[in-house]
Length: 277
Image 1 (cartoon, helix red, strand yellow):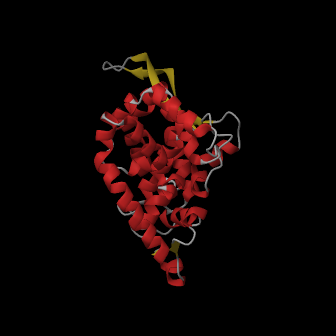
Image 2: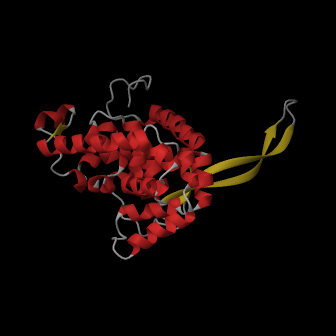
Image 3: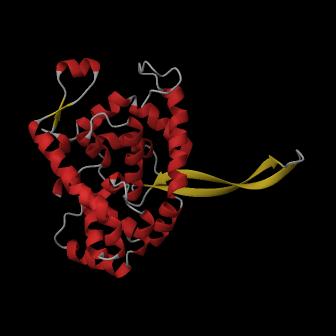
C-alpha cells in the first residue's frame, strides 16, 4: 500500500485514531529512527566505584546506553515531528547523549501532546486527510476529512490480514514477508502480532535479491530504502531485537519519569502525572 510506505508510525497513528497516546507516538518515532539507522544506541562500559554488601567501596563495570548519530543521519531528511529527537545531533558532529537524558530533551522539545500532534498534523503526508476547526484549535481535537476517513478504512483493511498472517509468512514465504515489511517501514511497530525474533531468520541472499530488484528503479531518497540497512546487518538484529524489550522498557520508564518534570503546558491532571498522555 503506497501511502503506508510514506507514513511514519506517528502519522499513521494520528490518522487511524487522533486520540492516540502521545507517549506511544514518541516511542514509535524513536524506534522508527533506530530502524532507519538515523540514530543508533552505543553501549559503553565504564569502571565506577560502588559499595558491596559490606558497604566497602569496590570497582565495578557499569554499562551506559548512549544515543548517537546513525550511519544514515547525514543523508536522511527528517520530518518535522522527528526533529524532537534529531535536533540535538544537528548541532554537533560527534555528540552522544545518554538515553535517559535524550528522553528528557525530547519531552522539552515536544512541549505537550497537543503541540506534538499539531506538528505531526502539519505533515505533507496528511494534507487533505485531517483538519482542525476553530473550536478544536482552542480546546483540542482533530477531525477527519472524507478522504481521510476513506484512507483510514483502507489502511486498517490492509493491515489486518498482514497482522494476522505475518508470523506464518516469516516461517514460510519469507520473500513475501520481507516485501510486506519493507513496504510498511516503521509501521511494523503497529502490528500487534509480529514476532521480531523471526526477522533474524531472513536470509542474506534474499535481502541481496530485494536490493538488486529495486536498486535501479527505486528512488533511494525515499524513507523505504533506509530500512535495508537494518535488515541487512546481523549485528543490528542482535543488538536491537535481542535487547529490544529492555531498551523499550527503559524508554518507557524514563519517559514516564521525565514527564513528571516537564509537563508544564497546562495539562490539568499533571499533579500526579497520571493523565499526561
